[in-house]
Image (cartoon, rainbow, N blue to C red; front, side, top):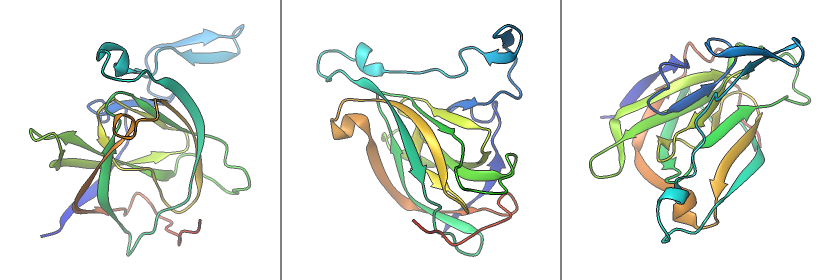
Length: 200
């Protein structure tokens, strides 16, 4: 039997078990800065490099801030199929959408990427009974907790560029662990109203 889930709105509270939502709206610790011309939210996300506390068996890691340009994923009949989850055992990972050069008519409140997460099971694999999918828009970033299972980035309908921050040391299984899963079908409607064929 195919496992099917529906998309939920991405909110600060709903995402707390998996990490942080990086956004201005809805934050309670906004302060005024820059001579009164800016709003600032301090400590908006918990950044983690767990290698520091995990003993000498792990190679040290350095922060990698990079640009991640993600082409839209293929969809079929308003659905997306998830076949793999991944986690970063020793590092948090931030994705923040940045200005989409050359893309016209973007509605900042319309969802443009999908955030798929799951809790860890007793056998140290993704617990598919807990898998969830959230719709995120271009004003919302996310910060995955270290060791949090999630799908590789899924953008819907358009290319989205992200600023990404993660601690890495070049050791494959320490930086990123992948887990194939039985397919899970995500119903994208009605959250994603415009689904276009993907092009790299």
